[in-house]
Length: 459
Image (cartoon, rainbow, N blue to C red; front, top):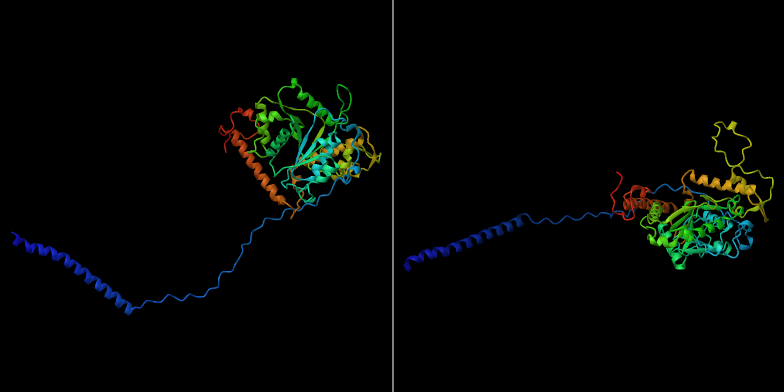
């Protein structure tokens, strides 16, 4: 049995050996063919690189926007304000009371651009009886201490004359640490009041012109009162327990306003995520939802203006030299004739032009409610109409200088970025309330609804 099995075992051993030999033979033939191919067709050397000049170093040329329209340089409109001694006297009927009224009356006025309009606002409040030491300009230019140390020039949009405000006019200036939005600036006012332990404060726009109503008489006493003393009367009324819970007191809407600081704290201050337009709607509606009063009381004339009077000395009400100057006349609202030939030949020049030509005797004051005062009112009314007859805020872009000065910003670019930020705020307001306009309560919304309501409009 064992002898018969051996031939089959040998056969199985031969099969692997045969396969190995077959593989070696194939390898030999492949190697031999590659050697022959190399002999008959040698490797072709790589092509010699052709010398090429490197591409020229070309810098792309940007495509620039059209150059902005150039505005003429601005000029100082208050030449007399070079020193305290040269200032005209405040009208005797508008002098601030001495001693000071029992209440402190801090007035905050924020400033970013247009020195001429700001200076006019400050002078108008001082000549309307507001104590200069109670007025605070908030330098919100984002230029830090540049104005304080006279590092900016008149044509720079963010210039203000720090020395004139503090040393000549006698008011206070506080710099913000950086450029703040409107909502942030409002919260900064509240923070200043907290720091000074003021329970209330006033704030006003920097583009207004305040005038006393010289023909007005107190109905109880029959006596004249300045704009400032009428404001103090309103303050005392609001502080009385009988007035109830109040948050905000308007004077010609918020051109001038009185703020109850604790009320602002109660509702959480201004929403800084809505930086400009619509943030006032948000704040005022939240005050009303909290049952905090907001009233509007007339205390004088507060014009919304975008330009400056030809000479701020007119606000001090000096006596005019020319007693024969024509009486002021408010421009007629009647339609103009289509034919120039039919225009009246004796139509007086515009009030601003007549005011520009008026000469004054600064040694004596004018009379209360005089023709010159009424001319001044007409000139202020003209400024207000001109501002509101076209683009309201073109006054902010007059100054285009300041190149090379600290914290320089392109004037047109700054305005463009500002408009984009305003649009962002409108969108945030709409998303917060699910509603686009100021009538939040009219849309059925309440204090607990922010960020919880679907849009009530269709895109």
